[in-house]
Amino acid sequence: MYGRILHPHSPDDCFINVNVGGFKQRMEHGVLNRFPQTRLGRLLCCSSKEAVLELCDDFTPSEMEYYFDRNPRFFCYVINFYLTGKIHLVEGLCVVSFVQEIEYWGIKERHLDYCCSNKFYELMQLAEDKSWDQRSDELQSSGSSIEELSVLKDDIEMFEGSWCADVRRNIWIRLEDPAYSTSAKVMAVASLSAVIVSIVAMCVHSMPDFNQVDHNEREIENPILNFFENLCVLFFSGEFLLRLAVAPSARKFLCSPLNIIDLMSIMPFYFTLACDLMADSENTDLENVGKVVQILRLMRVFRILKLARHSSGLRSLGATLRNSSSEVGQLVLFLSVGISMFSALIYYVENESQESELQTMPIGWWWATISMTTVGYGDTFPVTPAGKLVGSVCILCGLLIVALPITNIFNKFSKFYERQKLIEAKAEPSTASTGVLPSSES
Image 1 (cartoon, rainbow, N blue to C red):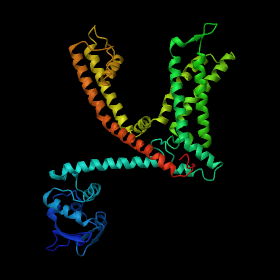
Image 2: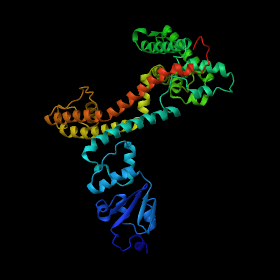
Image 3: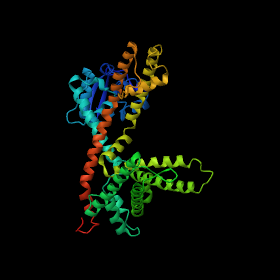
Image 4: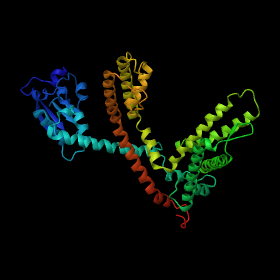
């Protein structure tokens, strides 16, 4: 029944009428059958009205007219595609809309004519870059992007209706935005100085010339270095508690990556102090307190990461790593495959040589790792001609594998860094417009 309705026997049964947004065109079956995988080509194979309506927006069986609610201007290029087998770019049409149109009509990108293919891929690359920038903006507006130093308007609005709103807001702005006023710059310089002093003290403490011993010949900390250490920790603790007290949202504050780093740089000191007190009490259950204290003292290295609060580059690096998980994963995967392959090869070509140190697979793993990452310590190396050939190929493959995802990661870092510098440049006028400070400081 539907066959008779859809394909009636008449002199016109080899034609269909296509109506695209008011533009009507009579098209021959033979032309459409040149590309049976396209939308119009699939229409000829439909045996029911439901199947036809899945491919078009409306259908009139009496006139054999198929209606499509699409761009009539683009359909002229579709007709030319069925006649010539090539599709051309539409002047004045967005490349994203062009891709959507050809996907709708079932036309593949490989059908692009040579004169338009290079321009198409250039426009697609530009569109992808703009799309990435837009996604970055959305991530930043949602709070999952780079940690901004400037005070956001929504954070300032959260102070409304809370206790001591004006006082907390003024302190919060000075702590979070060094470019806001002179007092804010003084606070930022003091915080940065404390971080630098703490790092220098930690480095000096590792030097044997500054170590001291007590009357029992036990090594003790230098009192001067210990004084600076305690002073810096007290400053960090006071700064963290002050930020927490004046934060518009304590939950959001504690979930911030920079604030987590601040907490991790403070807590080892108090854990070490507690362990020392318990060790002095001669508790027999704390035999490994000394090792715990050493580990906790090593955790003071997290204070170096506090520099991220004052460095656009470090914050951009962190944002790049968060948004480059796929590229980093590919890099690790490529290196793992290469290391596994070359470690096996170097083992089989070197294990019979008495002069070679590559006699086991684990040693081969180590050699392949330092070779593919272009480190080359020189502690292990092949000595046979076949081993040197494998080593040369391993180094060349390592260069190529490392270089493949680095370009994308570097491009993301550059964009994040430029965006962060732009945010800091706009920080002063944006915060001054809130009007929360007297005119003498704004």
